Image (cartoon, rainbow, N blue to C red; front, side, top):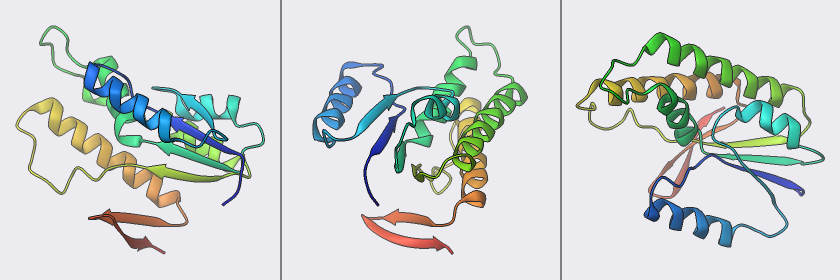
Length: 159
């Protein structure tokens, strides 16, 4: 699709195994790509760093939503206020969509479909699944093309 590329990484190194994964991703990423490592406020951060990028790859929405939820997750076994988290996530998605609408760059947004598996056993897990599903819906509504990867094979969903 062209260069320059801005790669937006949303992962955090919460443990040693994840730290190794992030390092491996950094190692195999093309040296010509500019990388933005950001956990939240993805749209506003991209707007500040996009420069002349022709392609922006956001990897990934799944971790981004988790990062936002973690800001509100109960650290003392207090219930998570789902409506506050949903509002924060909706605001951040709107910022990303606004960023996309105000640039000429092509965006490739990576996410996971977690609603195809078992229903999570706890409230926060179910909230996460529902929030990610809603974010995926909001983003795919605005996307020109959507692909679902199954066993490494792309299945075109949209158009």
